[in-house]
Structure formats: C-alpha cells, structure tokens
Image 1 (spheres, rainbow, N blue to C red):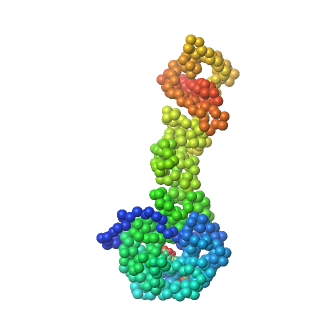
Image 2: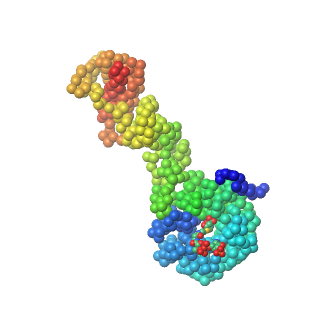
Image 3: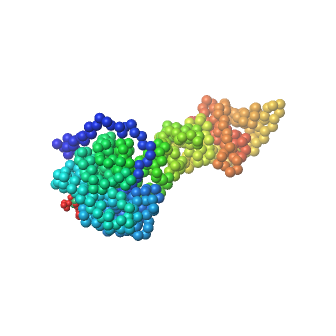
Amino acid sequence: MSDFDYRKYKPFPPVPKADRRWPDQLIEKAPVWCSVDLRDGNQALIEPMTARQKSRLWDQLVKVGFKEIEVGFPSASSHDFDFVRELIENDRIPEDVTIQVLVQARKELIEKTFEALKGARRAVVHVYNSTSTVQREQVFGLDRQGIIDIAVNGAKLVQECAQRYPETEWIFEYSPESFTGTELDFAVAVCNAVTAVWQPTADKPVIINLPATVEMSTPNIYADQIEWFCDKVDNRDSLLISLHTHNDRGCAVAAAELGVMAGADRVEGTLMGNGERTGNMDVVTMAMNLYSQGVDPKLDLSNMDEIIQTVKECTQLPVHPRHPWAGELVFTAFSGSHQDAIKKCLSRREQENPWEVAYLPIDPADIGRSYQEVIRINSQSGKGGIAYVLERDYGYELPRWLQIDFSSAVQAYAEKSESEVGSEEIFSLFQNTYLNDEGRWQLGSYNVSREDHVDKLLAELSLGSTREKISGIGNGVVASFVDAMEKFTGKKIVLVEYNEHALSQSADAEAVCYIQLNVEGERYCGCGRSHDIVQASLDGILRAINKAEEQAQHAAA
Ligand SMILES: CC(=O)SCCNC(=O)CCNC(=O)[C@H](O)C(C)(C)COP(=O)(O)OP(=O)(O)OC[C@H]1O[C@@H](n2cnc3c(N)ncnc32)[C@H](O)[C@@H]1OP(=O)(O)O
Ligand SMILES: CC(C)C(=O)C(=O)O
C-alpha cells in the first residue's frame, strides 16, 4: 500500500430516511446567530488573542449586531476568565447582547465558570462532552451509559451552580460534541437525558447544539441528521436547535444552510470562518448568502473592509482575496466578456428595479466597495472593460468602432508588460495613441468662408519650424479640411466615422471628437479635444492623417 491510498478510509453511511422534507424548504429568515470568534476562533490561533485584541474583536462583533457571543472558556485560562470579568465589571455588554461561555462537563471547571460569570445580567452556559463512537471507545473508554452519566452530571452541576447565582438570567446549552460521528439514536438519548435534568419549556427553552466538530460527510447527510434528530428528540418545542459546523470538507456554510432548512433555529460560527483546522462556519458568507436572496441577515455587514481589518489584526491571519463576498477580488472582472456584460447591465440598470447585473451577484456598494474595482484591465480584458474605465475615470465615451481600435493597443501593451494595466496607464496609452502631436503636423490658425453654399478653408500647418499653407473646399468645415489634406498629402481620404460629446469630467465644457478616416484603403483613428467643437474635429482628423503618414514612412523605410 502506498502512503496515498484511498482504501484506508471508509465512506460515511447515509441516513436511512423515507420522509426527507428539508430539500423543499427555503430559508426565509435569518437564524439566531452566535459568534464563537472569541472562543473556537481563539483556541485555534497560533498565538491566542491578547486582551486588547479580544476587546477590539468584541466591539466589532457587537457593532456587526451579534446578540449572542461566546466570549471564551473561562475555566481554561486566566486570560479568558479575566476577559469575561472585564466585560461584566466594566458594563460593556449591551442590554440586548448575551454572553456565552464554554465548559467541559467537569465539576471544578463548571464551578470556576460560574465564578467568572458572577454579576452578569444574562448568560448562556454551554456545557459539552464528546459522544462519538471513536471518542467513547478510544478517548474516554466508556460505554454509552458512561457517556450519558458525564453529560447528566454536567447538566446537574450547571443547574446547581446557576441556582447559587439567581441574580443572573441563565440560559443552558448542551453540545453532544462530535455529533456527526455519533449514532443518531444515541445523540438523541444523550440530549434527552440532559434536558430531562434541565426541564426546559417553550417559554424557557434550552439550546441543543449539534456540532459537526469534524465535517465528515456531504452537507445533505448533515441535513438528514438534523432533520432526523429534530423529529425524534423529546420536547422539540422547548429546544432551540443550534448548528456548529466546521469546514474540513469545505462545506461548512452549505451544511449550516441545509441544516437550517432541516429545522435548526440557531447557527454558531465566526467572521471569515476562522477556527479549528479549516475553520468554523463563516457567518459573513452565510449572512451574505441570505442578503443576496433578499432575506434580512440581521447582521450589519455594510462596512466589510472594517470587519476584515479587525479580523486580520486580531487573528493575525490573512483574508483570501477570493474569500466569498469579502475578498478584495470578488467583485473584479478582468476577462473581456465579463466586463462587457457588466458594463452593459450597469448602464441599463434602473435604480428602482431589483438588482440584476451579470457576474455581480450583489451591488458591491452595499458593502462599501467602490465600482473602481469592478473592472480591472489585463491581457484577458476586452473593449467593453477598457471603455468602461475610460468613461468612469476620465469621461471619454468611446464609440464602439474606437473601442475596437483601442482595445488592440491595450492588449498589445498588456501582453508586453505581462501585468495589470492601471487606469492611468490606459489613459496615457489612449493619449499617446489618439491625442499625440509630438513630431507631427499640427494645425495653426485657420479661416473658413462660405460662398454659393460652398465652404472654403485656409489653414496653416506646422511641424517644428516648418510652416505649410493649405486650402480646400467642401460642404462644411470638416469636408473642406479633408479636401485640403488630400491635396497636401496627395492621398485619397474618406471620413468614415465621426462622433462627438461634451466631456462630462471637464470643468470648462470641453468637447471631444472621435474620427475614423479611410486613407488609401486603410483605417486610421484620431481624437480631438477642445473648447471649440470645430477645432476638436479638425485636430482629430489631422491626428488620424498623421498616423497614416507615419505608417507610410515606416513602410517605405
Ligand atoms: C471541539 C471543541 O472545540 S471543544 C473545546 C476545546 N477547547 C479547549 O480544550 C480549550 C480549553 N481547554 C483547556 O485549556 C484544557 O482542556 C482545560 C484547562 C479545560 C482542562 O485541562 P486538563 O484537565 O489539564 O486537560 P485535558 O483537557 O487534557 O483533560 C482531559 C480530561 O478531561 C476529560 N474530558 C475532556 N473533555 C471533557 C468533557 N467535555 N467533559 C468531561 N470530561 C472531559 C478527558 O476524558 C480527560 O480525562 P482523563 O484526565 O481522565 O483522561
Ligand atoms: C464545543 C463544541 C460546540 C465545538 O466547538 C465543536 O464541536 O466544534
């Protein structure tokens, strides 16, 4: 057997179920969220958070709008204990926020936990023990009854301690840790034994948390487990069924979503999915998934960059640029056809209609992202994206024929530079390609007169110290200038395309004019920009002709 041998592993058994209902459910409201950033997130860090980092993350979690926050494992370390005390003693817990703490089902740890919570207005005490076959057999060396005894003793101790501190409103939570590796009938039996101690009612429910401590199966199987559990457990109406998924197979969010469809009321997770191994369920992703379906996520994620910054600074972990909804590249299109579709959808969008923009599942502005990042240019980009950047940043509304012409210049440039082409680079390339007069003929003074419906143009061209007088006639200034240039160059020139617009980004009302000429069978484009539309047109024509001349000289050389 080689080291990499799939025969080492066995498939996860499906849940035999003839009455599967969850696939037909829709999630129409947000679950109760509980952040476990300061506990599960913290226990997985290379360097656990300092008091200052915890405090900062706490403030952020409150700001985002979590109403339940697991703040630590106060019996495990003095840091966690002190942090809980600090929150309580300095009155830092808003009225509508409930703190939660985790503890193993062990006497001395439970007692210490209640000491840490002394004086709290309201708190969730979350007690757990492992119930899976592997842990029963190999870690605890106990049979089913032995495991039930640990859970029941823990539940009794929690209840007794709570009675010692009646000034606090207590909420109890129990987790059959490693639920996904536990036989379902046994998970139900353990939880029933715990709730038989706590005696919850519909008015005073307890939380039963069903963790995928390790994600072991496809998310549909987790949903089957949740639905099966909800159907069989005693007193379902007096329980809040909570989910706590991990991301070992990369499906923690999917599992939580399907678990909610299967009947769960509450979801535990962390911001950006920090947590043990591959992490906890990412609350940002699940909440944004709801948001993008038109469901109020009951969390305020509008300042995504601030959230990311806080998470990064407190956990010392990076956030991937392609992290769902939040990464710095998730609203960016580099590829041409995507850019083209985005540009068209955005320009046709009517504010009052529901959001429907190709390749952008939500409006990036909702989470504080600018449209600057939506379209970025590299060698994979096309004309639509390039035109979008020029219009957005410089007010140039390139006609389609010029977009086609210019995109080949940008493509060549991007291939040569082998990197992204920034907006300023694109504009400078545009100027060099269509607005450049260096070493070329420029238009000096000109005069147009009209006689018998025919326009006559006299003009002066200059190139360095050389001056040339030209003249032409035609129907309009443009036609007479083209005529003059035909005589001057000795070439056949036809005006193919002409577009103009006022430059919206110019404070003093400049116009821009785009020209395409056919010079001796070849097409050349030029552009003019001036306060005077005639000047802009003539400049555009001359620049296109200059390009034709330059090309002819190169060909001759
Ligand atoms: C899936 C999760 O994320 S669960 C949360 C995990 N988080 C943490 O463990 C971080 C905080 N924990 C700690 O710092 C430590 O475990 C402490 C301080 C709480 C306890 O430390 P210690 O008692 O020295 O050690 P340890 O955790 O190894 O204890 C293991 C013992 O407790 C028992 N035990 C472990 N978990 C539980 C539990 N939930 N309920 C009852 N007993 C338990 C084990 O069987 C073992 O018993 P043994 O000593 O008879 O073999
Ligand atoms: C204690 C429990 C809820 C836990 O963190 C887990 O199972 O992952």
